[in-house]
Image 1 (cartoon, rainbow, N blue to C red):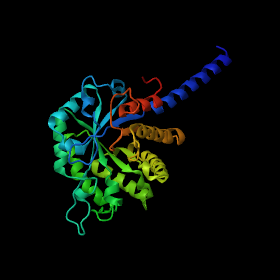
Image 2: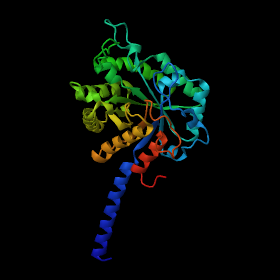
Image 3: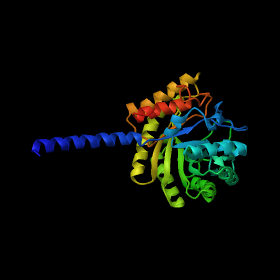
Length: 342
């Protein structure tokens, strides 16, 4: 073989490797889906066809193939009838989609004067609730593969609370860890292999000493759990303005540093619309713009993309052929990041 031909083959091989690496970096993004689901007295909204998703012939076959994890709200599971949980778990098992639960994990603090935290503040829960949720999933023949903590660093450490309502306790990081551990252990008792992660708002990145305290949070949890958090997912309140996008980019970049220190596994971004969106189309268009902003304009490469809503919009999760539904948005994201997806 001539030197020219060997050189040409080497160049082609290098280009193929580079192309493959670039494609893998996109296709490696896990897609999570978390539709609105609630049972009174939860203040959350509910997709009108939420339970229809778990019929055998539900029209989201292609979206289901693209989804790695289906996230359920703990507030829903706590109050849902067992037959609903049975239906959901059976269908997700048949589709080979892992189950995640997003729930408060801060065990109600001992009496603190003045009163703070507890049931009046998001992110708190009890050991009994963790056991109840775990029992329902297990009774349905399922397993909690992922537990997503509902913003404990924010609500335990940084949250002040609105005037006239229950304030946050603003505890030191190590005390927040003390609060979450009993609830995390309750989930682990039922599901020893559960992968524990965290959801935090981008506003963390505007707090004093947030880099040091985030590192302290992750190190402390690693020491107590015996392993690093599996993931950190960013919740960006887009309606609050561009400063939250700036904060999210700052937070994302810091998390990439913390990944190199083996303090956290995957980084996720929650993609949604805003509470101000007046129609399903507006909500979906907002979510698409947020995807483009982070992944196309800013070139962020999250390992997890979470298609999630807790607001009124969009009203429907189905069908996947309707671009104004949540499963339609799943297919949109899959096609953007995975060329060839149907």
